[in-house]
Image 1 (cartoon, rainbow, N blue to C red):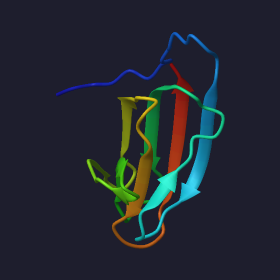
Image 2 (image 1 turned 180 degrees about the vertical axis):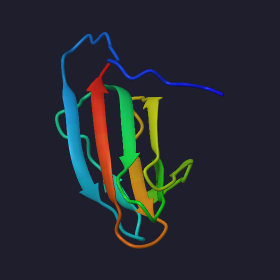
Image 3 (image 1 turned 30 degrees about the vertical axis):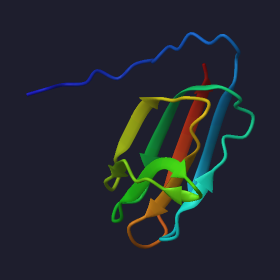
Length: 104
């Protein structure tokens, strides 16, 4: 079986900057604005709901291209490009989504 030892994750940043916010999701896809981040290097998404999933994906013409589906209590950490805007959408209900981003 696999194990995971908790600890610190360290990022080297050319420009210091972080973003952290809990956002409400709905079944309508919504743009996600990373206020204060100009060149995201890493983004972390965590579904805080214990029942419903949340879709995450890039924006394409004002619509989500769902590429990740976070299960209840699931999370994802991924590298990001400054040119990519994210959107989010609940599969049902109004689950809360924790979003953290770090400058590149």
